Amino acid sequence: MSETDHLFSGAAPLYPSTESFSDIKSTTPIPPSSSSSSSPPQGTALPVASQYPQVEYNYGWSGWKDRGFAIAFWIHFIIVVILGFALGIPAIRADAQKSYDDPTRTVFDYNADLFIRIFAGAAVLSGLVAFVAFFVLQRCAGRIIKCSLYMGVAMQILLCITLFVVAWPMGIITLIFVLISLWYIYYVRNRIAFAEAHIQVGCSALRSHPSILLVAIGMLILQLLWVLFWSLMALGFEHVVNRSNDKDSSSNKSAGGLLAIVLLTSLYWGALTFRNITHFVTACVVGQWWFIADAHRQYA
Image (cartoon, rainbow, N blue to C red):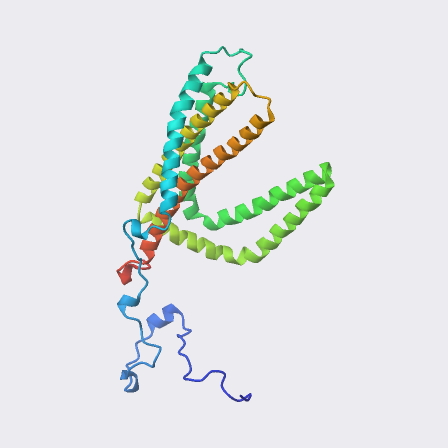
């Protein structure tokens, strides 16, 4: 192979016109010549309609990839609900019979009214914030991305200054993370507009299917119920542990630590599963919005 030989064999590839869309629309179409009436070159023919991207649907258990995990999760959910009622309700009743200044009250000492108010207030506030954030994200997605990046760096700089005053070795480590964040922002700043366009397209797909908001609200209610049942179960276990006569033994302490890990894993598993249901349904809606049968509405 010499320097004058072509790099690749075969005909030269066909490139689209570099004219703008408005210029193409303003010009009159050129009548086809006799040579253009022939069949297009090999490899340049348009695909048939059956070759366009389509969504494949799998119905029934045969298409599921995680049947075992689904069965295990629902068994876990039923166990949490049963233990929540079996252990949590008696624990609350037993604690309600004691006076507030009873010295035998240990970890289970709390004000139930205050706890319920804080829990309900946090649930309502988080739901409203999520609902408002959905509409704010559609109108100023790029600004939110920039604000999150710059505010993160600002918080890191404040933490770095504080650590330099308190413990300068930790300040050096934080300074390294600040430099990494600045380096990251420098390289992604030109891609923020691209991310904003993708967010707007995704929001357009969700606006065309308003029922997805009902699914999100339903999953939010299920997550609140899940946290409530899990809290009853955790309080019930805490009440059972406090009634044990062998509180100071090392084996009891290690068992309590293992129980705490299991309970936190249970809480995380349930909350993450219900949240992922919303993500899965949203992804299906967006995918159906992109790959619809009508080609004229595919990018409308």
